[in-house]
Length: 372
Ligand SMILES: *[C@@H]1O[C@H](CO)[C@@H](O)[C@H](O)[C@H]1NC(C)=O
Ligand SMILES: *[C@@H]1O[C@H](CO)[C@@H](O)[C@H](O)[C@H]1NC(C)=O
Ligand SMILES: *[C@@H]1O[C@H](CO)[C@@H](O)[C@H](O)[C@H]1NC(C)=O
Image: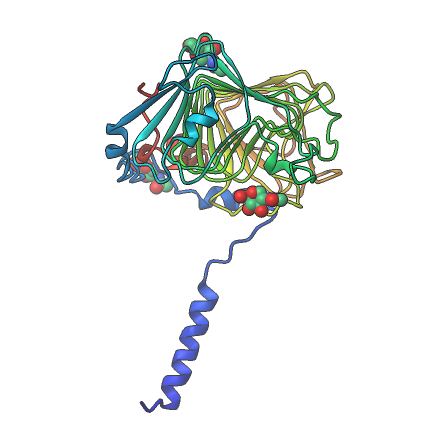
């Protein structure tokens, strides 16, 4: 084939054009208003096109496998540990496995749900008398290889698979509370990195970094999240609705933040960020330090108990934010209405954040409470 000069130049130009127009994810210091404009504008659950259920879900939900986990059971067909029950779920399962925990029972185990096992529910038999899953590793705890577990390895429960549901369970890390911001002191109770996870009527109770909301689309509904500093963190895109957020740190309350700069995962605008809707933020600290430089977040219709400190902090220092390092609010109740970096959005700006459409939820959020 003879390639003439014009064709060559044209294809080079086209190649350059394609190269230049590739979306380049910008990783740090996400400008709050960029984040706002990257959300699907003016959408409702219905017109976001997410009323359509994920294709796999209806057949999956039609077949349930029920496992009862009872530490004291001796009869055949019952599991003594959550781990044993998970080990029995086939890789690539296409049914929903419902693991039911006995009322008021404490499960002393570290739970890891591998990504090859989607569609798992872990629920309490009785949400009025919830089951507790507890362990006490921190990032500094040494693993089998003699090295510190790190943040990834220290969580009591880790959910790597998609379409996880939890209902009425207490996730706990009871490592002794460390000094605020101590190095390697993270003590997460729950780490979620699978996508399309629903956490309903649960308690997440840990120390520093109690909830490692690592990545994926997540829906936290009617749940309580307790911790010390930086206790909701990660790069997921999550809606927290009707949640109680309680700071157990007497010095200062520090809320949703991004991981330390040394963490490998970075926020991608439009795909990361937290939206808190109709939540309460309370606790022992006198003030709330909101945010770290590299993750945007948004509060709407929420009650915030304490004075908001108009600062953002980096890894080791507290800084005054520049304009790009801000967070937004819509119709929140808070004592210091005039805090200089709190941007009150208007309804049109807030709308993308204030419903399950923020996380394309209508295609995957189960009807609540999840069926047995
Ligand atoms: C948002 O949606 C409403 C109702 O569908 C419509 O009346 C309005 O014009 C829309 N606003 C924008 C900015 O598109
Ligand atoms: C933590 O987990 C994420 C997701 O699996 C991974 O990308 C990252 O490299 C891990 N970090 C460390 C320090 O192992
Ligand atoms: C879960 O639901 C039960 C029953 O309504 C309620 O008593 C309990 O406080 C709820 N738990 C959380 C963490 O909200």
